[in-house]
Image (cartoon, rainbow, N blue to C red; front, side, top):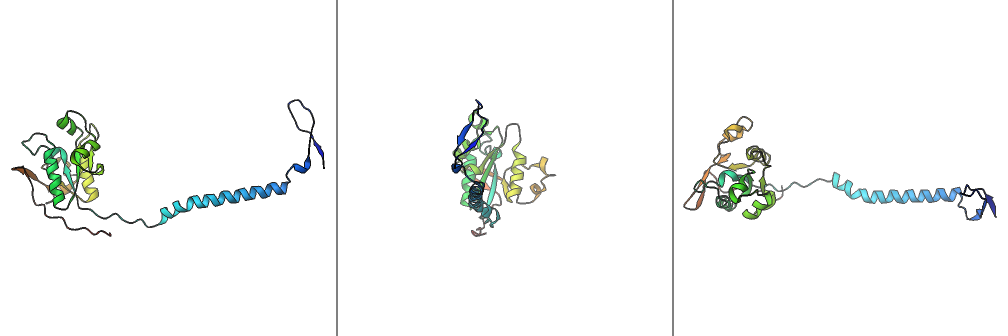
Length: 205
């Protein structure tokens, strides 16, 4: 069947369209329904893995025997001059005892050691540690509050000869015996007061 439809073209002429090729309303509705169904299926397939990750139980990471090192303090343990060597030796000693060391430095530590600012990654390479184990605080800030907050978060102790008296009110743990581990270098060997072999940790916790 041939039918005429008036369409508003630019030159306002009448064109003839074969109505037999024009899709019916019911056909268009069916196609839309199929398209919506397919879209819904794709959304379900896309979202299901994410929903599963959101609701599934997340296994806890195995606990670790963390001990933090006050890098800016320890680096002065050798002749009271800044050197990375005492920090390396403390880290080695902690590992020998079964602890996982983490080191926090003041922002100016790099200037004292190398005459320039050193980032976390720079110190990590110098100390042969993972970047997650080293932190250099932002310029213009003190390392002490970050060190103490991190120790509290991880339930860790701190290797330092600093007493942190300015922070004792906010962090009373600094006055508890054993929280601060004092040490020194004698005849090239590290001595850490009162630090015993780490207790084994459960791997499936």
